[in-house]
Image (cartoon, rainbow, N blue to C red; front, side):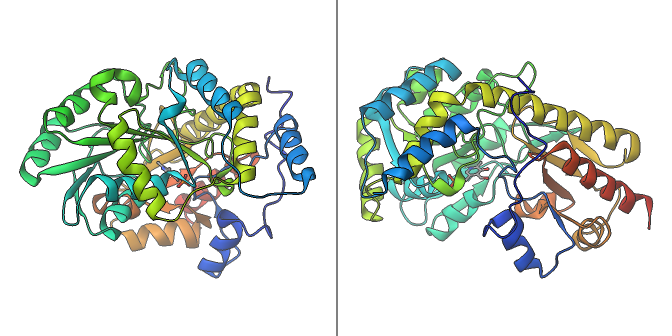
Length: 393
Ligand SMILES: Cc1ncc(COP(=O)(O)O)c(C=O)c1O
């Protein structure tokens, strides 16, 4: 597999108005930082998928477009093939992204001032979508046991009851800590939400990046009791590196919840989907299995390499081995005492652009998140720079 697809020689993204390369440089005002931050990959799609996109662009007309029956056939087939879950096309609403859908869900299912639960450290737009929409963010922090994270169920239930939480935004798999939640963990938190009538928005955008013996379970596949109170957010955008094509598929089986969600979506002025996004999503889900399989081997090798490097050269950096996602969550608290010191270490001495831990939770200010969806050579460069910074100039 690995020989067919090349994850080492990648196109240069500088000058393509890319967030990861160009925007970072503009924002930081520096050109000496190796960007390993925002969660997109350095890899181009394989030719078989690009051909379908080229075929569509050669038509030359990009007018309003809706998903057709063939699109839904593909989606249903992908979900059965990859997650063993039979979805129904009537559940699907196409949106321009998962964060957009989370924002719609917050407005559809809560009123201003209502409480929404998250589990920090977590992808920071969750908090932003809650607060920017005038709702109250309640966090039940994950428990960190020597780098392995678990949900704090007792704390979550206490806060749900005390704060009268109406909605819970679950990150599954979890960004940034890399957990792939087990069915029992999902059932436990799901039962708490069911008991307290809390709607669950499950953000499953990282679900195709799962390693070793870990298996992804969609919250929606756990049974009717959970599904009827759930909004499942899925998208090919992480899996196939097409975030710029802005296409997500939001699954809501409960007709009344779906109606409320669609109303807010309409009220936001969104109707037809991105024409090329639909073509690319369908092509990726039709033709992308082999590429994804090879990609996972590459990412897993990168994770192993980073873990081994840090174990040998920088054991004071405690890295959580991710069960899923392509993000490393690194704890520098044995090395630095403040966020400023950490930034100085990462930017001025290691010349890296990572994501600061404080973005994901106040209490993780001495962490950094590193994106390893890059060629092995880029990863080696980053690790060498980090190692040199830690070893002293
Ligand atoms: C957990 C999670 N949800 C959503 C997104 C972004 O999704 P979208 O670009 O579809 O809004 C990301 C991107 O990093 C993510 O990590």
